[in-house]
Image (cartoon, rainbow, N blue to C red; front, side, top):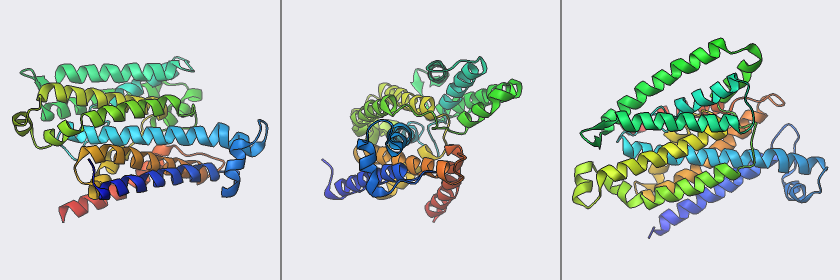
Length: 325
């Protein structure tokens, strides 16, 4: 059972998430009064405000929330898996594999569901490489997993650079936007929200073991945790969450790195609280970042990854300074 303080924190984060979605529905190049949002949601087809809210802003806000939640929960899992507070969802090269798959499909002229399918295939291939190369004596070692992930990510980065160099001009802009994070092709949030629900539930099932695993493998084993199967489960869940996020919105940095730190300051280290708090906080933060991305230079839109970097870099540096003190 969680305490009253943690319940209050989760309630506050849930309200913050709802407020971020409400702001996303109101803000844009076509301003909609806060009191008119409900009317717009109920408006008949063909009404301008209704079409803007239902077909453009709401699907994008839902995809942004799901993507932010996926990245934040994956960040929580990755930081336990490699025992490094600087780890993020992309540390094992999973996003690099997804990027290669998606950009390869775009370069080949594919469209529709082929692009996310190729991205997921690339993420799965990268995860398989980590699973094969990250074992030492039948065990996954945190340091080796981290090293293998860094090397694989560097290799995928070289492939991405090659693809951009040979891409025709008419496809280059779309490829660059996807690499920097792009929610302009929102599908309504259904698949990404389902991935967040399933992945978050899996992370909660592992929460008690995560609490013990964070204390070290030997201590966890003494307390009855089967370390190797648990690490494999954590890796697979984190990989699936990351792949789902990349498939939805491309590569978006700092959400999975900064949000777990922020949540730990308020929630502590109990993963029964940390996982849902990270999902709510990460989702709300990305919704706000995407709202800024499409309104700062409206009608021109920025890649949301640019906004998360602008927010995340000083925030993370401030957290580092705080930890050092």
